[in-house]
Image (cartoon, rainbow, N blue to C red; front, top):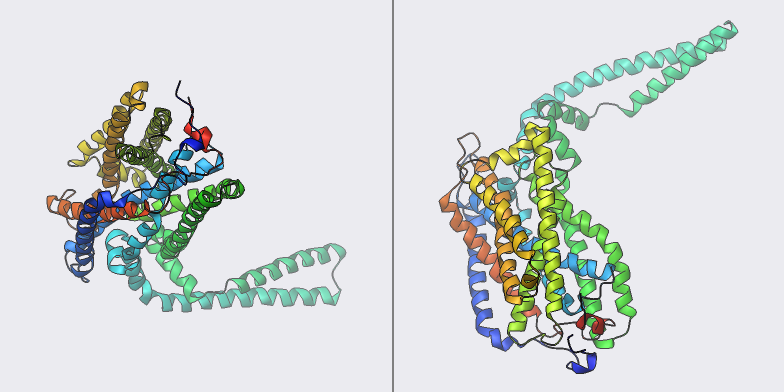
Length: 504
């Protein structure tokens, strides 16, 4: 039985991170991150193709940058998920590690800042080919619009005149009063039908927009339908996602830090109340952001399980990152009294649970697409079973599920900080492979349209590494900065004693 620890046994005001001890590390992260990030952005905007040219370095780098930003965004969003879930379920065990959940989630505003290049056409055209395809479709069908509009309008006018004439003639017959009772009833029915058709035609007078849509829809139904229903507002949605996620991060962080100063249950209860509402915009926002960023890489492909598949990976690997962060802090003398092996056991069980959940969702998605055998759906997996991506698929199945599943079955592993941190590192590597496996195979078919696509390019891997280091090292520097100035755990949370002395 562990010795009972109360708030009185802890430092007054909590524990604070001494950033001077990691000054050299921060400087190195800032230097590497800054150089690689600037290099990636320069390549993105200075070495891109013009209309009619062959793809250049910047076009390939667009996919590298999307891979890096998406990987780290899923980790940050996972930190926000655990923070919201912790409050919404009134969980007591995780109080002492919740501040690190908040710190991981605190990277979200910086990640949205890194998404600014995705607003520029030269980057968007490389990644989401539905945009240049739709512009080409508009240009191709534009000469047909004026003649079609004239023809449709003449037909519409003829129909309208015909039904209007029927309304007038029927009214005259009714007004004459020479019809029998049965004939009068028939005339009333005929009048209502004619008036309804006149009203319908009046509401649907052909316009340039409707004619253009009909012509484009006939040329490429899927592209036109998805553009009008979904794709054309993707930039606006990205802004809405940013506002929603940043607001959630800011409010939960603000209430948590303020509680460190004033104590009490006021903001503790407020966080719990609002987190129940935050779950909805979190789920909807993350799902559609992943659709906008990843599923839209091929506008013809779709999966109804896409959002939950990416969510499972985000929740799993943000927990892995949380375990690693807590272990590194403990290795450097922090959180010694507040984080015990019981907390590692609980975090390990959550890691195990979401490892199984990810595998369940991944298999369900594959099974449903395989069973339905629809060409638009199977294309996703066929592409990833070609060349060396087939080996990557096998590694992903074995490494992302079977290996951590077997290891995490053992209770001693979950209660050993260093061993479970190693498992966490492995999970992060597999998650990086998962996002890489989603993004990068789309690069060659998109950029080599009309030619035989080369699904693997060793030269482009250098761009992938530079982008990954640029985004990753920059965010690591920001994370170390965020550790300063606030306690490493919520030092005046009402349930702190319960969390410190948790047993399971």
